[in-house]
Image (cartoon, rainbow, N blue to C red):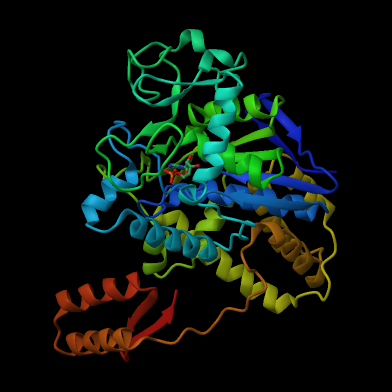
Length: 454
Ligand code: AMP
Ligand code: ZN
């Protein structure tokens, strides 16, 4: 058996394809002008869960994830997101890109995401994109507008709209799906592959059509075909990328290869935080660093994601992260008591559930029943947990480490002890909150305060 996963293109679960035992995977990566929020991380985790399940079924995976560090325009299509942020932070746009790229890799490591084989940067793949744009012009799928912009000719690709259901005939001029440059494009749904520099000074490259910079969609076509040998078995991204990003990518790639370049298009649903879409204006953008700063194990976030099906919108809360933190702690302690088995045997129930469209919530429910089942031996229980953990990635065989108190926490504890002696309850309560936010549990008794790690 192999993983069967929901394909947005055919609108049904489909078996993963492979060539000579290798599955090629492409996952749209971050635009590195800011930290990834926990929503972005939910989508990045999806590709890890797919890759781990494929490996558990005995195939290997070759995965590429791009780093968008040029060409992704802000929502109002006025400015490159990188250049906008560079102005805000007063740092060179390439320094902005490297800073957030590094933080992206730290987030992935903290979430125990197995790294991709390669993380190609858009800014270092300009040659690849220029080659592809030239080839598209030669094939009659792209044209140079009067202003020097190279456009993809949407009408040259008959299957446009199959992924998202947005057919060309129903796309109206003026819709906010691409830059509006009426009078220059031949057709309102055409999109730019290469844009002339104009007044722009930074992140500009030479091209056969003059100095300029690439559009966003072309990078994923260029990188996926180049680094995955011309064919992609599984393509992953967040649901918002279905249109226009993936629709345009498919048109570009298929026009080059002359066939269907991607077998399965997999999309992860969005994450909400405490009932609302995460946004700067709503002030509810949560980062993995915020989870860690509150003293939670970053893998608690991973467990929260696992307890929701990737295809359903999910709502995250501090309460669910806290509960997941406690669950992981309990499971690690129990597994240490049950005794880790020397070799992990295949648990076909768990494998079948994972291979059935990545039903991770059913796996965690099953593990909870195993945990309570008095008819199972400790070794059987440990085996089920450790087998599942090859995909869950919760590091369940890790023994609960004894964490040392930092000098700051020692000082806060001492301050609280003095506040209590001085009967300054307001200060003592305030210090308790600060200690709890740092991950400690405080209890008071007649003999004084005591603490433990949460
Ligand atoms: P970006 O860095 O904005 O290009 O986004 C990186 C990835 O995160 C893309 O695959 C997006 O579709 C995905 N994404 C954006 N917002 C969310 C969200 N709230 N929940 C889940 N995935 C998201
Ligand atoms: Zn992409």
